[in-house]
Image (cartoon, rainbow, N blue to C red):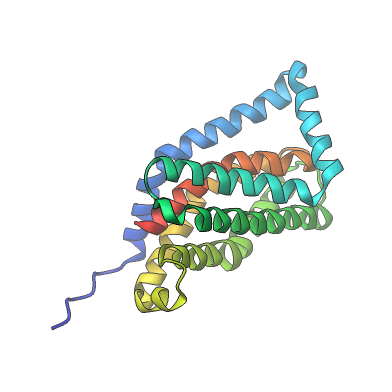
Length: 225
């Protein structure tokens, strides 16, 4: 006799996504806000920010690939190894997964930021900021970032087996995980990308990576749980 399927409601998923992430999100958003304030309000630090921006301008897409793989992949991998979340014999393939997955995301985010500057301009007006946040958090997040995060992290958690992944999930469980990850993403990223798009174009990917370092840890633990 099959056990009854757990009741699913979008309201419970929203509550759970918010509950899991409200305090960490607040910490990360405060951190991003402090960096933003330092850039705009402390002239003595402007040269340091500009040096990072120049490095991004000089290296182009390679900055996004390498830095996103490092902050989104390598640092979380180190944390998970230290916490015993990755078995000793599986560390190399997990590292390759994290580096490859987040390098691809870095490429996509850099393209998104570049296209949005072409579409809406690079001035940080309220209209431009709102348009960029909407594009970032609705079509890009709903149809690219969340689905491929769910599928590829699920594949990793299923011991890199597509068959095991599909066999261990029902349509309901996939949708529930999708909704949980999406709500978690919005809790963290809506305020964060508003601050990211307030910076000059060459500083947007660096700030994105600092927030991403935390979010990829959240994603890794939520997708496993």
